[in-house]
Length: 241
Image (cartoon, rainbow, N blue to C red; front, side):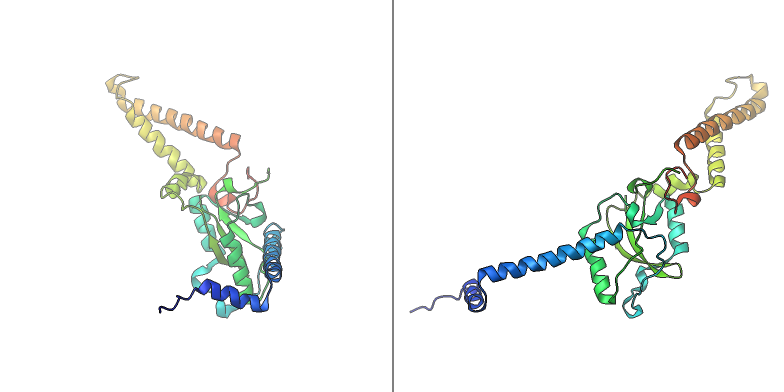
């Protein structure tokens, strides 16, 4: 005679019925989810609160990971190179992933503290900027150091730094206009406007014209759109500053 195989689910159900009714279990689980929801809501409220005056958190140095700690100078350099902003989390208009909230809760539990002063590094289009593809969430440690909590979204285009280089500083902008004007001038065939005896004069005059033309368009676009250089906007909450 063969013995019946053991059904673990039935064993678990039988063991559970000895101590709890289904109604008691559902109430317990419901209370767990309510606590989780309340905790998540508290964190979202902190993320949407004013952060301007908060410069540090009470981290336990024993649990900090060095690879997640960045100085403001390092953050500024990346923001300037890739034309990003480093602003309060309340200005972020994207949706924070659950993993970010989960990591905040985990850090608060591990460090026995309530984190605040959150900052996000991201392109301008992801912020609700006031009138004047890859976010990172930070919390201040103190003394201009920040702790990277979570990164989400897609990585930036490998060409973004190159594309944003002309807008990094005023000097970069002028250099780009001069190089572009030189390239455009070199594309015009020799003798197109003057005879071949005046090629040098023709090239110089055409080069000056190209500088004025390209520079005028670039400046008009910049002023019309309220654009500024990377070094000026990385911590500005105004879209035209």
